[in-house]
Image (cartoon, rainbow, N blue to C red; front, side, top):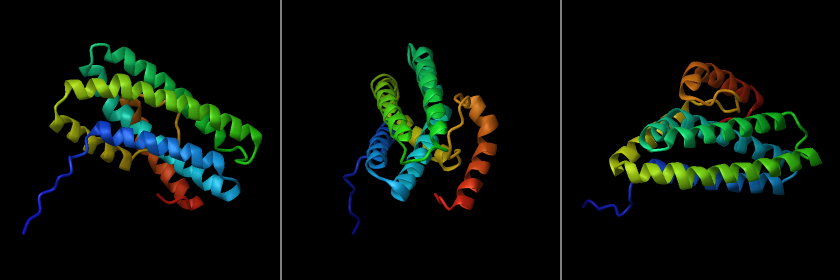
Length: 187
């Protein structure tokens, strides 16, 4: 006997909004932790932020720029925020995770990233949901997942556009994933 699923398929907006919530949780976990636990939490946070932003830059932002009336302006503002976040995240990679500097900068980054996610959800995601049908939104979700599967796992400031990600991304991803394997960070 076949059972009918009552589960609504996930679309790109649901998927990325869910990741925003996971990112907020990881910021909180990292700020509460200390020592090796804080380092591990920060690595998970850094990795999720890197793959999440890459997928948005490759898949979601170009579609928003094309579909939304003021899409190019919205996307340009988000790309500037993403570059700033990547720079801040990169600066934290070599800082002692238990230092006051790390904690202060991580709090600032958290606030900026939460503000950025709010802009995406209110302006970009809501606009895409209004302009695109369910099937298109579900296809975008699949494309985002594929982009994340091969995305760099570390921040690369200056690589915020779809063409830059297409050109630099594969090499950066290979290097990042090899470095992660050597350091034992896994996936």
